[in-house]
Image 1 (cartoon, helix red, strand yellow):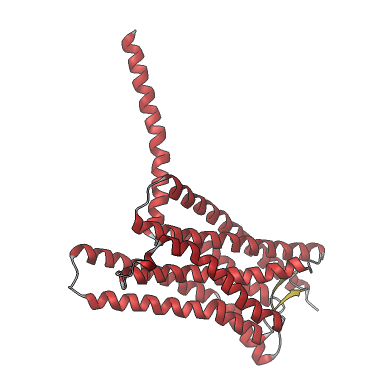
Image 2: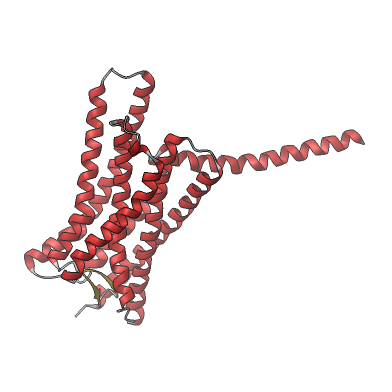
Length: 319
């Protein structure tokens, strides 16, 4: 039996998580629309276009991911307040979708790392620097990831309805299911990401004084961006620690914390909001797009004032 205090704490966690997820949804939607507008109406250099497209993939994933999580938090709040059940096939589908989207988020960062690896270390390979490849790649990944996860979760009955949380998600007490999912969605992409960036960093340091000043400046910028992205990815890893601790406590003691799912998803909601903002200051191409949009908004009213003043002077001269 869950105590009243535990129910209150659960309601607070769900409400706070909803706020962070809604904020992430709003920011990612705005930035994604800005990216689409920039790609469609403005001329983007070839070497920057792939980076901008990859950023668009990340923000689109955050948008859909945060929207899915927002619906889960809303169900928790409605369930806490009105004891309304949401057990349905749609609930099971949304639980699978949340896992696939989490995997796609890490794969989006992995695609970005892979492109930097090709551009810096294997710059002679032009086929892997094709824009079409990075447009098609996420669609192939989502098909492969969905098939793998369904093959794992369906036989193990991984995604179920949690009656005390009022949403569907992987059962954290189903150890084979949760460990298999963690390896596919979280640990595998994270290890690949670290390996790629470590390889890029070693390659740049090994070049030493062999490169021209222009290439050195570009490599220094790449190193700075890599460090910032690694900081963000490590923060994503750290935010998953509370849930991991509770899962290990369950394995040792055999007692499940009544708010295990909500405590696990609360840092995830924080990471959604933080990630949607942090990327704007991490990737120069994305930062320049947003700053240029702001400059255009400032310059246009100034131009209108100047044109109005010229017209008034012209009229005064004719009189």
